[in-house]
Image (tube, rainbow over all chains, first blue to last red; front, top):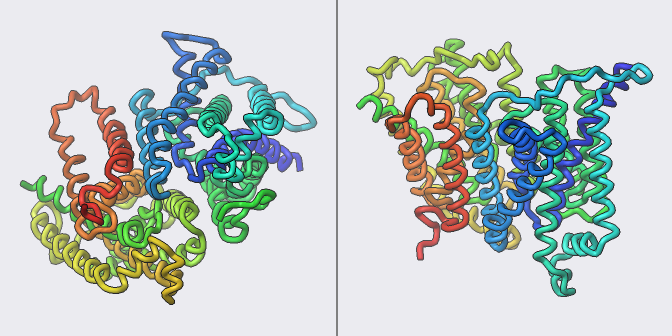
Length: 290
Length: 290
């Protein structure tokens, strides 16, 4: 029993980072109506840039290295909008998709050039887990969940309590009407890309704290984010949050039943099943698109 | 001379692969981002059967049949999805297939791959067989090209383009859109399986690392660069992409910079994909000239 509880706990920890990836992806979908295949690379760049700033010649302590890393990640997010997605906004969907796939491949190989293809880590001393009612958690994992809760809470405040957040939701609901009402589209665009990049980048940092860094981490986690987004209903931020948690928990509990080599099959099967039976998502509170 | 023949054979195999993707992506407008799965299924089926003692041509036919069957199985559920979602489903399917190759060691020997795949008896083995294999792949590629051109210039091909441009128009004309799409996917998978089987018997060694997102990007680049929705486009694209990527071997690159070559190539592929989408979405041979 304790074993399953421990797996469930691991799932919540993993799921809270997946939720960080998924909210950005779903926000971009909600506002721009396309699936950004390059979203995963923002995850990887957040993690790798933190590594960059925490190593010589900068040698910042990790908590300070996060700041420039997230700033650059956000700059990458804004740059891809400025030079790729915004100019392509009126072309056919397939053009955007191919563009974003090309971009993700470009960025991923950029990581290989700068940092190489080997596994890397932040080189933290592995802390002894705290034991609590028979369950083990490390300080890093507590930190992961706490910061995910903090960031997602912040997102909640931004989306529901500020004018910017309201206009963002309005655009997501009906872009033309929002434009007619005089909502500043440029501001919304910048906000969405900044939020999506910062959330993805920070989630990537958290994940790298607990595991390690590798150039394919973007793609692996993009697929989990897809699963979470679809589960929650595309464009639905809160759905994506719960979707992420669900994927994390399902994946970790599956380890008890299947070979760990097939752990990723969980998110794959979730994607396929959701697409087949509930295309609007399990938590399809808002009307899903298509 | 031997090397030139080698490049041409690879280019011909990729031309078949690109033509098969073009049927789906270019003509019918199905965003298949997991086409490499069918290439892999064809390669593995044919390799395993021929190693079990089946004549090579028969096992290649079985590889095609297996790929077509897999295409059919994927198409029935996945084609209920539209646009972007079909893209996600196929991308995920390709990752599932790759994980299957990697984990089912009893069948595929996992990451070790399958060495010693025989070439057809009448072609022989080793370097001496290159001219014959060149002739063989040239004939197969020409046959595929002619058959596909016959299909796409027939009324069937024109209906496919109607489906791509507007499904509702096709429906209003009394066409069964779903069945047309399923046929397209089966045909595309069948030919991708053929390309995969030829690849396996030519290279004589396959492993799961040969069937990753990289190959998907490469074949996507062939189709998009040459011109999607045209008959010559993918062939031209395949020759351009394969020749330019192979010619890198002749550049005088210092060995300590060797590790940068592959990722740099990857970055260039990605950048070219983005640039084509931005500047010339029709590719080199656009479908609608002028």
